Length: 223
Image (tube, helix red, strand yellow):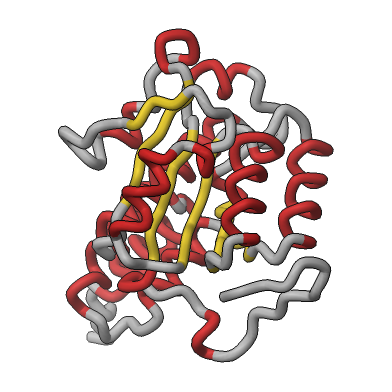
């Protein structure tokens, strides 16, 4: 999706929805230092949602890039994420803006996909900068807001407003996973996605288990 500076960007029609075969995910700076000053979200939920997003990407075969910034000071990417992709190298950067790091950009470009999905810490810095730059370069950019987080509620909300003005699409992780699934008849991913929902979308996961319990409860005998 190419944008013209200063022009409004509209996402509508079936072709604007995200497709797993066209998506590439970049997870940015989910590290201890950033988490220690996360104030826009419950930190437990930020980790949970990022892990749910990572697992959903794996279910749908979406190429996923893991990147940190100055790991020796900021700490390693959360194991809840790296364990989803065992053995995968984390790209450690010095650039605050991931989209200025050629290693990351080259890997993304090599996938041949144009629906770029981003999530990370902090929203107002390490997510906003690459999202705005990539959108300006013609990428179809989506930011997963609840797998990201900022130093304050205000910082997160202002970053979202800024990215929306730049033509960036904004979604939550479960909405994105549902869009990738699109049809429950796609049995090759449906049950695996259900497992992710059970682990990381507590209300929906528990409701699903309850539904299964009810379906397996014998009808009381009238005798």
